[in-house]
Image 1 (tube, rainbow, N blue to C red):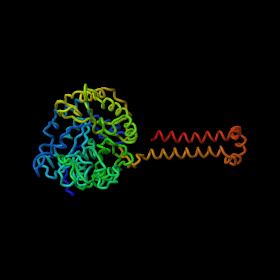
Image 2 (spheres, helix red, strand yellow; image 1 turned 90 degrees about the horizontal axis):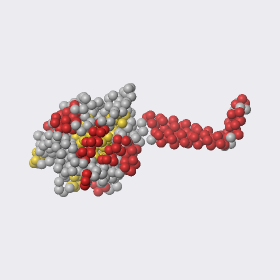
Image 3 (tube, one colour; image 1 turned 90 degrees about the vertical axis):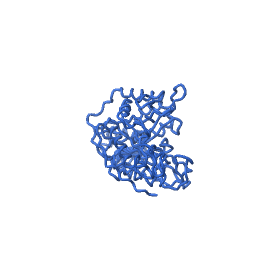
Image 4 (cartoon, rainbow, N blue to C red; image 1 turned 30 degrees about the horizontal axis):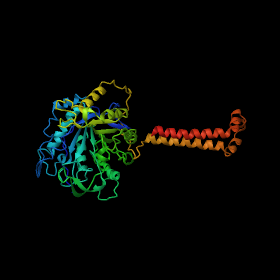
Length: 470
């Protein structure tokens, strides 16, 4: 069921202290031409409190969950952790003001609160990621995250959010939090999950956020391409993030199903936690490294299980790996919740939690104290790249591949000609002065060896060039 989107708030904010981000090949680049790696935190509350509780037609009980997230003291506490990015999760129904959300916590009130919070974070020198975290199809209230964005509301949500933050290029738009397209959810049992991820498909149930866990209902998802198109239709040029499957931990099909972004400002999203499908260094190397060589990779969520005797099993291995491979990351979560896993602080003053919080805070502090890497004194101009294709090759790489192929082909053919009788007419038909020269005589005597050598060099050049460019 299609529901009309609420009009977006007119209150937008131009980027101020942090420089505007854009994508150049596999890096995030600021306005001065310097590469940027995001090191930050998630902060939870705005995705659930505005929709939970209340009564029918008057749902919700708070915007920030009764937490002082948007106060100067909390923002100062976040700054004290040496972060340069904060991820703010959003609720689809609350932003649009639909499906019975209270006017006190949804619609214009919700949008103004989010915009003000984002503005204050940017003014404090941080980049901000806003993501579609909780949603629901039709008239169901968004009380959970779904297997994928819904076509009923998500495109309207992103057109509104993109319009709101179009003049804030330091706001990154995370298109969908954690897709998880299980086979049992498909109306068509033969549906390919990655095709659904990209282009959308029909599902047979949704998550209720209560009991029963899922409810039977036929609905159409919105694929990542549709969400990219919705954002770009507004003229917004913000960096977009597309998270993979299996709760955003599986990016194995990302390059083969890469959405087309006419602005060329698309990053691959990934969530990394211990115990998930891709939680081992071998998977990071096989699945993530090839993506990180093509586009920026942003880990919107990571964390750790504290374990006994403070034996962290994930962050001590993952963070150095991410730094080595130019992967950005944000840790869940900057909320003083009363359990030990994936919680960074014990109070709103920013005191690190035992083990995980202490480790992450110390790690970020050590990064902040490292000497800055020198950059070029002549940064490139901010030019919107041409649209990319689904294989991740831009025009420069494609031209290089063609040149290498032609040079290699000519070398191999020339080598074959010299090494066989095909070369005899060429040599005998050469000008007499060239034909009787010592060099030509030597080549004639060693024609087979020279031909094989040239052909081999051509083949080696092709392989070496392809490996370097890929």
